[in-house]
Image 1 (cartoon, rainbow, N blue to C red):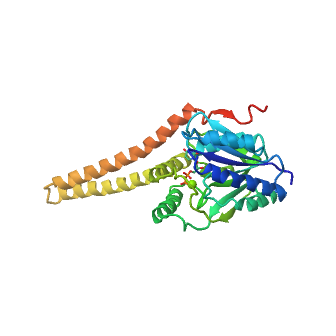
Image 2 (cartoon, helix red, strand yellow; image 1 turned 90 degrees about the vertical axis):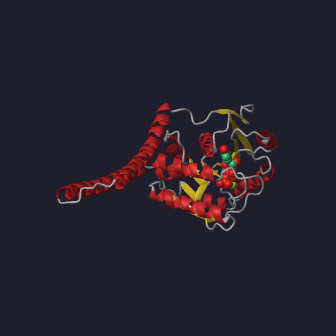
Image 3 (cartoon, rainbow, N blue to C red; image 1 turned 30 degrees about the vertical axis):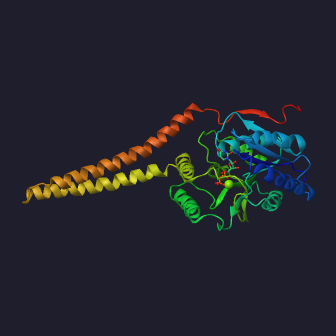
Length: 318
Ligand code: UDP
Ligand code: MG
């Protein structure tokens, strides 16, 4: 049972919420240690994702005051997924198991006890799954659930109602480290890593303070990124549409020949334009999707670093 746990928490402009939730995370890690679920080397790791407010200062102060809190900061804002990966990869070399969670207190930290129990029973990945969405607005709920369903149809396998609250063992993280892609969508990549996994159910609360950084536009972006990063199903659908269009145009062609040979040859200008625009529209749409993938190939071949760690609270101590 002598395992060290790092709780990895990405933070972007969270000066309002951090002073409230940081002590909660600290209490949690102490309680897990007391219960023997992890050892004294366990830490709470805050990743500052290039915040423009006082977040990094707060993290540094917390790290100075509490031995169990550590922090690292990125050179600039890279987005939730990159910040989380930075934290996980940094933690991977220092501990046996990680739990990632948002810093706004929305996810029930008490689910960590069960996650750790599952880990000790041999699970390498434990997904935190929301049991219900009462606290969300109707709009958020409908768009979020639509998001998972749409992702599924498009071939991006994800765990339903699971965001990025999850436990991952060192081994699973080593696996994740081998995914070299630049366009990150962790909740789709982690299931690809494999290993024994399970889920823990919890109720999600409202944000304790501050504002969400995931408005509808960003969520749509995440969904599009998830689909085009994970699956080539849209390309298959294009093939399907192309096939249907081929059949339809053959029928129209046969009909045109038929009318030419047996009578009424007054050709309809309107219907011709209609067909042309229809086909033109579909072709453009398909080109757009293909373009999405070409864009991905472009950025993947560039293989830019996904994050650069500027400094950590541990640098001075070493
Ligand atoms: N976050 C981040 N970088 C960003 C945006 C968000 O590290 O560019 C962090 C944020 O501090 C929080 C988590 O990602 O800990 C989730 O963000 P948020 O709570 O705003 O999203 P929501 O829960 O509303 O989907
Ligand atoms: Mg949140």
